[in-house]
Amino acid sequence: MNEVRTAIPKTRILFVIDEMESITAGGTERQLLHLIKVCKAAGMRPYVAVLRGTKWLTADLAGCPVQHFQWASLFSISSVVRALEFLRYLQHRKFSIVHALFPESNLIVPVLSRIAGVSVVVGHRRNLRSEFRTPMAPLILLQRLSNLAVDAVVVNSEAVRKRVLALERVPSRKLHLVYNGIDLRAMQPSAQERSRFRRALGLGPHHLLVGNLSGLRLVKGIDTFIDAAIHLRIHTSLMRFVVVGEGDQKDALLERIRSAGLEDVFTICDPAMDVRAPLSGMDIGVLSSRAEGFSNSLLEYMSFGLPIVATDVGGNREALGGAGLLIPPGDPSALASAILSLRDPHLREALGCEAKRTVGKFEMRCSDSRFVDIQLRLLQRNRPADSTSPVAPTADPALEHASRP
Image (cartoon, rainbow, N blue to C red):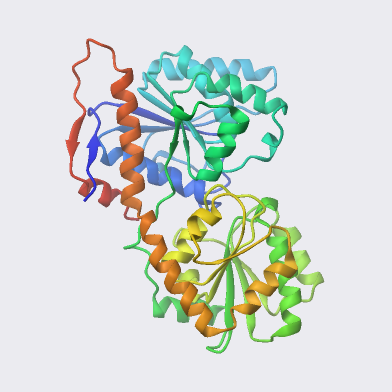
């Protein structure tokens, strides 16, 4: 059993985010709520600061105090006023640790936290950011300056770690790899949920349902998935397609489906906090992203023993480890060909079993324990020399409890 540690009881920890469309919009959004639970279970007092919008995120939903700022743009005259407001907030609350979770917060929060006297400042990188494609892109230069103020940068895949190391030039000693985790006890298929979900889509037992859990954003490559469905319809009449997600591309994607004449075989469903129903109903899991850090959707497919087709980007290869079919991004023909090969029930079963076996190494308790341990080590390292506040060991049932939905 993994050993974790608890912080001194009054350790205040702040998570700073830019903006979130909804709590079901993506993995990072759900990850925020989970990290809050983990920190509370470890004896910390979490808070959330939101740079803009996201009024739906209340203290009741987050499970901790939430402070909203109206930071419309980082590069406007009003940004100076917002920065001073944020600085006063940091100084008033006297946070021990500040986490910058999203891209814009990573640009500005570390420096403001240092000015406010925060003991530990942590940046996060969860994807391969397109604006950082070249070493001289304006934002990368600003990010390098901001990185001077951080004690650590948490990354969620080796692919992201290598990218941050190369482009942002963060010292290797500051980079900490914490894979996304999944609560395997909670992620179990249900025959009842499978029947209900498939019945809602008008499917019979003979249909193969190819599913994609994903935000409806350009980077997620849903257009490629739709184009692959066009190819597949020529070869088989038994496949049906579903995307479970939301985002700003929804109208454009629905129009693409209509234009291709796929309305009778392709459905876009609104997401729900509990993804077990759609996962239970699927026969094949697809990830068509153009870029990824480390996909929560892949872990969810794997936990349900689904055969998987995924683009070979970001940490997808690390996650699958041979337990799925990898294809180039943005290639509908390759995606269609890989999906078509999974008409073979023996191949589906073999890949599904391998996925179920492989996902065990991403058990949530391991990720939670590592995340807490990194924070406590940084706190201990940065604690004033005359401080005698303890960092106490404990067993991990509390964190196991925090992992439960």
